[in-house]
Length: 379
Image: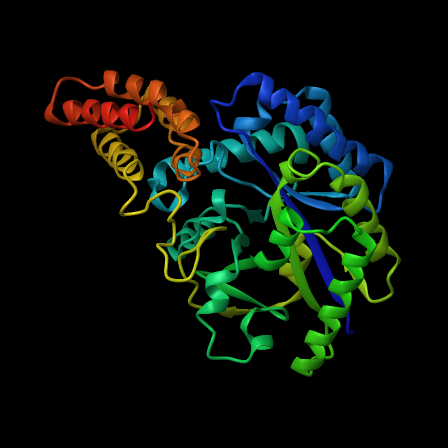
């Protein structure tokens, strides 16, 4: 049947070092109203990943409301990595533990023993070896960004570049590629007429299928920071989210579905999927906002992490593992890339505690040198 399937995903996260008053304000203007809108308007259906680093600070009453929406089928939960490390540069052992920690949090508060088939890597930072890890842990699909994948197929006609009737696959894991173009429109452009925007997407998908001579279904999904709604962009809940979902629910040509329905509904094809993130640009290092070879902060930040991991005893002590979890989150180098040096240094007291944990050695001295360099860069 010729039909458009759409999905809308939101990423809810705050770093472990976030200031309480900032986190509380985002809860007041964004997280709580988003759930209230879903409760008031059953047409709103979202896919959501919620990091433990935020979830452990949310009111129990809020988690119970998420669970109620989940049980009604309005909310799909997508797992993520508990404290938001950049997965491609994080040791497998720590990724496995943080993935399981986040899953345990979901099971305790939201999904009980239901299947959890999908996972969102922080920053949508993807490389093919992560698909192997996700497969080993039992995941069927993961989220990634489409820009670099589409670019590597630039020798093809436009309508053949982005998969809309099939799903790329690596190591048996479906890699669901979000539309960066459409997601960025929600984040930055005039989309405050949600009904009109939904109609544009429905028409666009119909035209796409016609170019493909495809008489079956096609899909497109958007995924963005949850904080976009009414924190970064006041009015987006009322003027975009509700009318957008209304329009699709009333359409005879489209459905708003969870990401797992897209995964289950389309053919999978083994593909070469390039390293990428939500921000990767053509001709740039894949993770340029976190690990750029010419960035004066990225280099000591990443060297510190590599040395700290290399020196870690096996098995890790609970103290050291918790320090790694709560300080090696991806925001610090990104904040420096954005010019927010005062925020980039929030991780450094934790880095100091890690350095202090180790016995005297050349490596410990180097860790201290790197901390001093990062403090001087962020002064």
